[in-house]
Amino acid sequence: MMVPLLSPLLLPALLGLYPAELPSPVTSLLLHGRFVATKPEFRIIALSNVADACAGVASSSPREARACLERTYELALATRPKGLDLLHPDSNHGLWLSHLALVLGAADRTGKCLDAGLHERIAVELMRRSLSEPLAHVPSYPGVRARWPADQSATLASLHRYDVAHGGMLSTEPARRYFTVVERSASKDGLPRSEVAQVTDSGRYPRGCALSFSVRYLAEVDLPRARALWQRYVAGYLVDGVLVTGFREWPKGVERGEDADSGPVVSGIGAAASAFGISAARAMGDERLAQRLESVADRVTWLGGKVSTSIERAAASTLAAAVRASARQQKPLVR
Image (cartoon, rainbow, N blue to C red; front, side, top):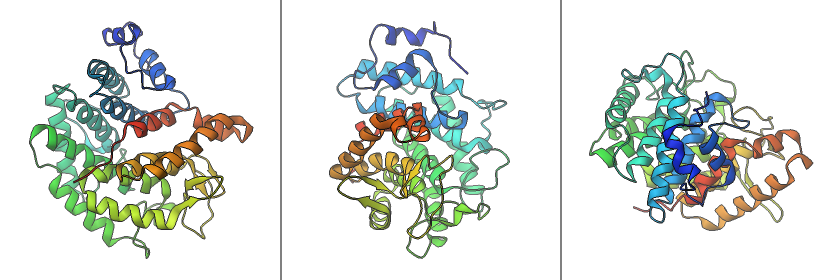
């Protein structure tokens, strides 16, 4: 769905009041409401990353950041799954609700909550569903039996942001149960499997895209556990050579191709694992690695179709631009 061009929340962009730090593909999204090479189910993830990028510049550009967050929230509401009633949020849409709550949580850092009532309804429902599920994971999509720890890590981060902004403790017990389930089902190297309900073939493996994603969000929830996960992940998955730096998508010895989650996989290195790895590295305070990953991403973006059509498409996507914009503003998390 595209938001009408003359929406009142678009006026700040037309006046040049969105943060200058945002890359042009993100500004284009804010201006026109159009997504490039980004599947409908991933658009809310792109928008939560845009929200984090906006919040990241709030100290230097408060008015622009707030306008950016208001527009991002408007666009996020426009991606609402068909039939989802926000007066009674259905937690079968766990991924969408979690990332909408992340948008609201990002906006909370810059001023008054954009919709305190909706934020509370979503947070309470995500907490309730997390505790009622045997595996302590909300479903990502209606009718899907798989339970992905990476998606639940975003759910937990959204609950933690709600707690910080609104004085709650909704994230505490869901986080405790999550870590119990994930650590109990971990692979022999101590890394969490990418899917804990054991209904997907690829789910038995720890995957780079899921691990990078999880570290980035779990750092907000439980920094010591996130740091321990990061250390195991870097030891087993990081490829840091003279010409290329990136994270493997699959464990060493497992040679599988790309899928919708991984993005392109070249010589074992995954596009999504490496892109989300930039934010994860910065959250962990590893600026050297973050810069190395960014440098490679810059070269891949420049090469584009000279390498492959799938890489060109992935590099040009709104999701990729949003993830990189968020990563640029990610600060080390210290407790």
